[in-house]
Amino acid sequence: MAAVSTPALSQDELRLRDRLLEDLEHRGNAVVTVAPEDAEPGFCFTAGAWWKHGVPEAVVIGLPPRMGPVLLDAYVDRAAMGERFLPGVLYRDFFDGVPLTFEHVSQQHYPQYFGSAYVLYPDGAFPAVQIIVPTPDGYWPWSVDAPAGFDQWQPVLTRTGRPESWTPEN
Image 1 (spheres, rainbow, N blue to C red):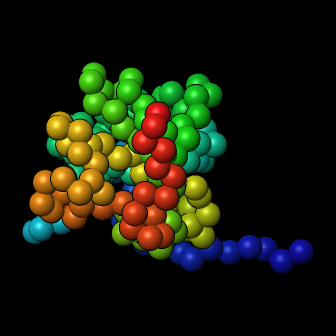
Image 2 (cartoon, one colour):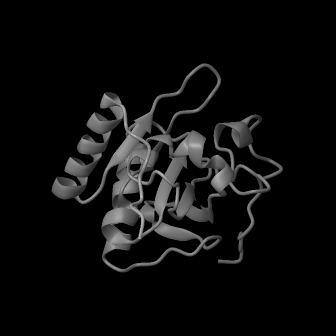
């Protein structure tokens, strides 16, 4: 059997991988935060949830800077304990009074929204979900009455760019 080789990582990539692995060992989870730039919203994502716990990596886009990592930590903690989150279902117990939902992330979005995770998964073979949060007034990015530009501030990372699992009756 021939040995499998992976592309060599740069020194920066090796440092990033080491930092992510250290976070996984000490915290059980690593979160990477990307600051907003120009008209693009900031976002954060997990790196290593699949590796360590066998749960999908997750991304959240457009939340205030301190909210995203807290939400991702809560997701990984709960998922690592065996709780499963179904796309399209409303979950009302992450934030007081604010529901959220999950959606599968299409692999076409992995390079942009999970780029640093490739130091752990060079072949990009990991499942991922997006955690979607409505406005404080309850408008989802796809809502007709959502504030102008909200769908750009929190894009839906499915293949179609629309919710594909949405079950609003929950």
